[in-house]
Length: 456
Image (cartoon, rainbow, N blue to C red; front, side):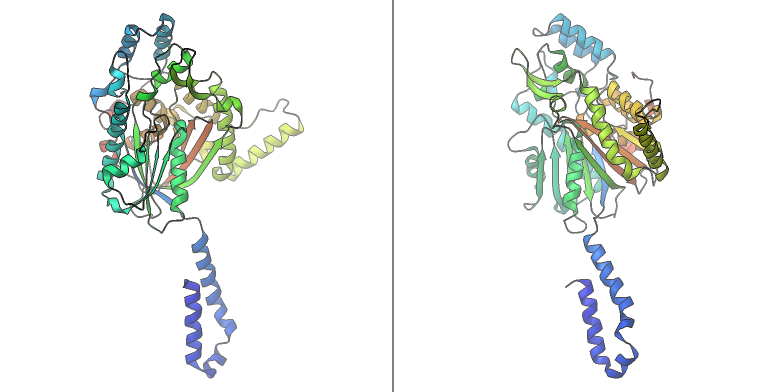
């Protein structure tokens, strides 16, 4: 029985007992101001979208044993029997402008000469990263494993049987009625997709339900041993990384509230679909090919995403400016009128931009007219950890918190780019300031060295 029905029944019973004289004193129309608001409030609470909260998150902190300096990568390239001199020279040039430090890490399989990743080694890499971040998250939140209702994992290029989600269920002996989803092939924007999916499920689950989201990329199986330059970029930029996130429909103990998730998919365009494409080169060697048109396609996807996001977050003044300039450009056919870029700095205090490389970060910075401080978390994450695919935005959030810049009420915009081609973004609002990440996060041993003047 609903709350409204229960209230109506109580009123009817009360009238029946009170008798005719009392009913004469209290005509039914006098009860309507009580009954109608009760019914309206019940309907509103039953059908309104339920808020999703971020309880906490943890990022993988690799051991120094896995460190892979740039000099080591070049030395391995020179010692390789498969790589041509022109390919080695290309690797050296890209490394010089990569924005990576000598502290980035790779799994043991890529430390070999020649690198080789068997199925067992790929599983070992998954277990190392995923189990570490889940252990860290459980230690921070101290939740009972039986209270986890949803599990969503994402890893693009490694999809074993049983799945990575099943590996987690087996390791931690999670409930048998758990809602389990394993995403693959979605690239560096998949963590936002996973968060959005978990949010959708939480909205139809009982209040207080919890979702565990685990994002990683297993780079060992995707190592490319050929001479195609577009496919060598993955070897140069990608490094170990992963994150575990606990979401809930209860505000209790939460630190952020999820307000918006916007996904932009451009796979209907053939060029966009193939701009990040796993394939074999002319010699039959498998790898991921990054198209020369990637930056242009990423720019178009970002424009489409911010067009959808803008009306949700921008103040009215910015929306009016954008509308007036757009109308003027149509009336005058764009002559002498530059397109107006809304000032997203009026809507967000912090930005977590996917660390695809210096060119990607600079492109987004120019496109959104951001300052160097706004993109500092992205550049420092790329420098210290490399490109950890979809998990990188959580390292950036950790950087902001480790620097003590996150305050209650601040809004954060996470932007991820991935294969498909996709641009996915999420908006978080800080509802409780936390000061522990500078001590316990992935930046614990190095935050005092940042920011640095790095490659742009």
